[in-house]
Image 1 (cartoon, rainbow over the protein chains, first blue to last red):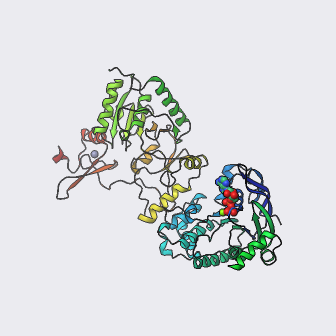
Image 2: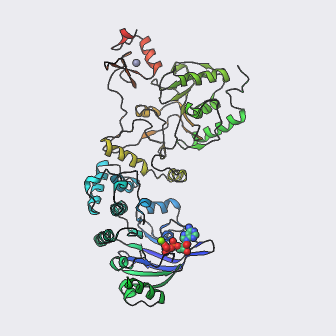
Image 3: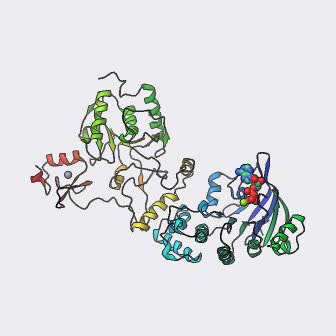
Length: 256
Length: 285
Ligand SMILES: Nc1ncnc2c1ncn2[C@@H]1O[C@H](COP(=O)(O)OP(=O)(O)O)[C@@H](O)[C@H]1O
Ligand SMILES: [Mg+2]
Ligand SMILES: [Zn+2]
């Protein structure tokens, strides 16, 4: 089987400082990869370099495109990369305000990607927005409300709906549950897990919260100082960590 | 004539503006940056349009200036005076006799011809500004034809009002390429933008010029199930009985009596001169 995504020797520097370096892995269709590590270990840098939000200094990010098969997205044209960004790729930001248009209604937020790829039927756009509100457990009656009137958890669920409406083949998520209350986090995790299963989503999830990857990720990469120090099946890595840093990470969680 | 250079601006500035105009005509609907000059009038008075007119006028031209369709508003009168004083060109109120027409908020009712130029005063040239304030981003969206956001604005309209409520500055796509702001003309005027005359747009404060060459396709954006409609008040003109012109509503008295009259004063007058009579013709006469 062709990997959906092949990352090869990816590196991003901030001047002399390492953002991330020497990162290589394959992601297969239907797989969820978790990236964990303490704050500042390079998780967001790596995610943004893969998703095209940052230009990497070295390496390849090869995506199995529908039209042309595996293509290096780092060197593809900007229009093509931006097109991927609103069709086959999705990006869920930690802060919903970075991923939503706060001055546009919930329905308009969900409909934007549909309109961006050429849907010109209002009734259809609205029906799909209503359907997606239901799927992320937001009452359909809120369809014309602005996200600024929503709670943090609802905003995050709206952001997810807005991203998934076009049926992306790869979803990038940066701390999707970060900053939310614990009970709200649990509900969001539950929702994400169901969506991942139902839709057979392929995803890369960055988090510093091991409980999140325990629930969602098939495989795990552990990062420290911009490098991957350990990788493996989630349960294996969490239950039998090999690297000293991973052991520290896991034990500090167990102490909580 | 006065001590000014012809049409106020120096020749070098006019050449710079003409280059921007030619570039605009070569890339229909694309906003060309230009170095807008201080004009002896405030920005809201159409300094962009005035600069484009200044760079367009020749001594042989006949100029007409309208504001909301009327030749006799303060704004129209002062711009017309400005060019009478600085360029010494002939002026007219008759659409057919004008070779250059500067306008704010309307397209004349009479069909324009190949030997005419229509100059629009534009306050905000960027149609994407409403939803994306970052100029770097809107420029990229134009370059890559990422116009989904424009439909988000129309979607919001329908979801809030049950129909596309945008009635002025209704966005258009020019020559199948650039989404463009037609300036705050009523959407009733949008279909007229498919015309034989040259259309030039000047935004002074925002320092942009854009253009629509003759016979260029201009399409108003819409949805399949909410198609664009060039709507107007559902009345004939009370003075000239025109059924096909854009109307202003005028309150007549405290009792709530009102009348509808052509916003294009020259069109209305020429119809009355030709003997057309509206509901209130006697009283008005
Ligand atoms: N814009 C930036 N400029 C300079 N250094 C940065 C920038 N963003 C992140 N860094 C640095 O890069 C490293 C990795 O940061 P980041 O990818 O944000 O880590 P994480 O998401 O794991 O917390 C850190 O040392 C951080 O200080
Ligand atoms: Mg981070
Ligand atoms: Zn009339």
